[in-house]
Figure 1 (cartoon, rainbow, N blue to C red):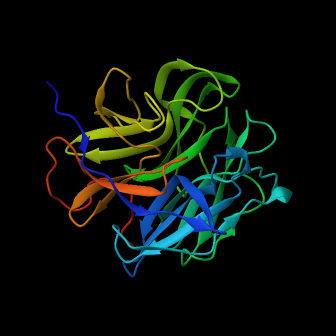
Figure 2 (figure 1 turned 90 degrees about the vertical axis):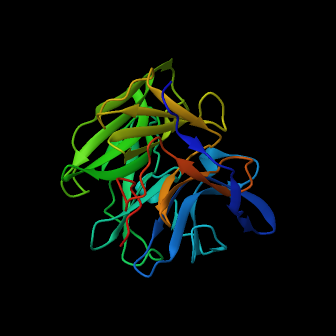
Length: 294
């Protein structure tokens, strides 16, 4: 029997509060700055869920990944003048000079969602990169995740096999500079079909012990993520499931000599963290996980 990817016990590390009410965190990202401080950015909104009214990105900081976390001023607000209709699923990387935040800004046409970019030098102050999206895709293309593979940048995101609908997929594009992106290609095609939200949301790709792992969800329900293993970071099959964890909008983080996985979502009361174990994991420095150590 193939060894499985497993998670330990989840512990809540952060619960947002604003205006005296209960707020949720959904798709989020974490990154450590040059001083070793952790930053969290994510979708946030007052409960109950209202995804098309999610118009600000939460920001929180902590000295350690496990907390305690301090909530900061939101870093980005929807800009209607640019055609943004919502702010979904930020993902932050460092290119050696600056921080880049990729996110879904929506748009009136859900078959041509705008994937946008904002930049920062300190993770507190952000400036949009021009008035236009980097590219458009659908249906509701969203949840970008970026890492570097063989000398080029790769962005994974969830979409459908055609912008108008079809199979739920994980698409990807490549770039030499994080600004100019190739045409879409497909890394994973699910048998399920439709528009709206699907079961290929929140794609996250990690290389560990000679294999590539794709985390996607919600599958089979809102609070589960499934993991697929491949020898090729651009080709995953639904028959190659390597594990399932109790997490929504999962992010994988390398810190303190081990892997961790987060979970969040509507009605989940914040962000949670658990140790993550890969088959044949060796305690080595960062082995492909995307959290940059600036």
